[in-house]
Length: 409
Figure 1 (cartoon, rainbow, N blue to C red):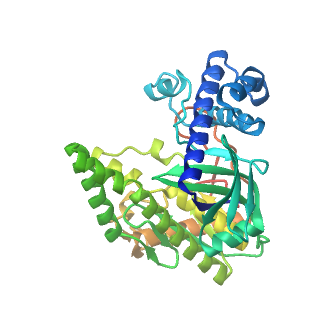
Figure 2 (cartoon, rainbow, N blue to C red; figure 1 turned 60 degrees about the horizontal axis):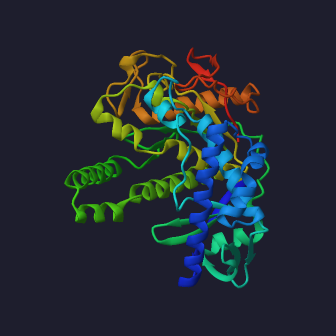
Figure 3 (tube, rainbow, N blue to C red; figure 1 turned 135 degrees about the vertical axis):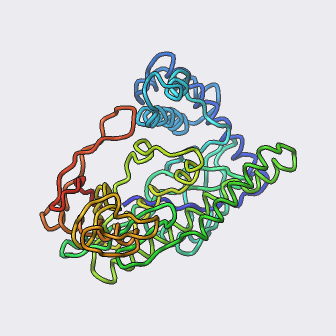
């Protein structure tokens, strides 16, 4: 399993100047290579190398390895752009992205391989290639856990980053996975929501209204500062930028760690909702859009997935259709069952429960049913590139609700 470990570089002023010069040159060369790829419609690595390799080396003074990484980075950027969900070809967003070549920021990340970068873990220094030559004894630091993982499992490329006046290296690590526990018979269902970020089938609610009040306060402050648009307001915006993203990432890590630890402790798997394309399928009023789109549920799912793979806990994704309307006791489906945001009251059997807990129990039931049928190794087909949302194959469960074939990790 590939994980990324980020370490902070502690260069001297002379070293920092050399790193900055190198990063600017690599990204300037990448922008030129991108223009050639766009004009000649050549976006394959080896073909594009024939048109650009020599000039990149001569004009920007890059070494052989650096020039190859510049060309490969450009090809990867076009591959990512092509795979993105940009809407219909006639849409404004699609035209903006595809009718001009990709441009790279002067301080964009640059990949390094083992020929350009070597690590000395005991001394906590790196030797890194720059335009000024090989620069040795560049100090780095990180948490003890990350340093240990780096020393044991680092393998492959590392990315040089410059952010907020600081230098970082993002190193790729090949961490071994635990053997998947296929003997599980029960699952821990997780219901994801806006008011309550995650609710387990055991009844535990994580995050909630207090967190949302803080998110609203941050969003309101950001809007006021953007409208004011004075130098002091811009300074405050720069100081606060990425603050919410860091906070969301931290909370998602904590939720994922708790969920995986609970599933591992009780010998259960984890059942999650498959929310692929949910933003394209759901229509909301304007005041609701920021709240609906401001939490990284996909990131939370990824964190749970990779932590579960490390622990050997199976993860199954099921379709969340009608889980909020279905009674977890009798299976009756009715829109009126959802009495309010927090209260579920079945119109058939009279069962009453917290709405999110009821939904998480339905998610758990669907995952257990699919697991018993031996579908744990089945993954959904990749969605077609339709330009709008995604499409998935669905099957019908015993309760009559439509359910996607599960994904496992």
